[in-house]
Image (cartoon, rainbow, N blue to C red; front, side):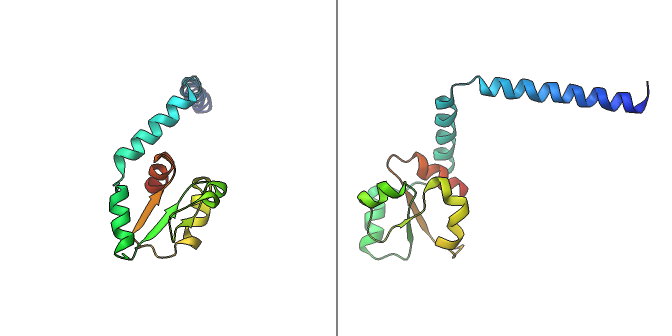
Length: 122
């Protein structure tokens, strides 16, 4: 068998294997996939309680408060001094919004899911 045929066979087998993995992933319930991603992110990041954040605000700690909710949610009410960068745009806008790479950042959202995902990205 020629080298060309061997390469074609290997490529075909790899393509079949990768498509099988893609089909298996696509068959999973999207909500359970997202729930798993959020659980993994929450386990991987350090969290602070609302009391911790309130204490930081009260003592005027040098930190950034990042609200990763959507603009409408932010407009409806947010923590004093918070910066709004929606989770869906975080990777595109965070460098401009928070240029200090060493800044302490408190990240929050409505339920903690978007905040955990955002914190993992940061």
